[in-house]
Length: 95
Image (cartoon, rainbow, N blue to C red; front, side, top):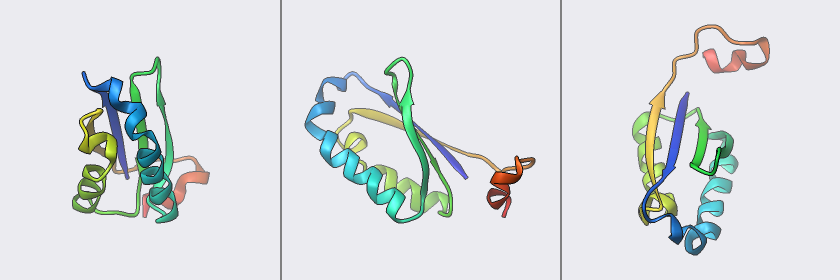
C-alpha cells in the first residue's frame, strides 16, 4: 500500500489550467482499481492519494503522468506502507 503526498509547489497558480486533466488522471486510478482514496491536504496544501494493488515502479510511472506532477503544480512523495494490524474492514490490505 502506498501513500502519495502531492504538495503544492511555487507553480500552484497553474492548477486551474491542469485541473480537468488531473481529475481525469484520478478517475483513471479509481477505474484501474489502484486508488482507494483521494483528498485535499488541509489547509489547501495539496492532496493525498492512497493506492494499492500496484508495484512501486508502476506507481512511480503513474504518478509521473499526473498532469499536476508533469507541470510542476505539485511535488510528489511516495511512502510505502506495509500493513501490520488493521481494522477487520481493511484486512484485504494485509495480503
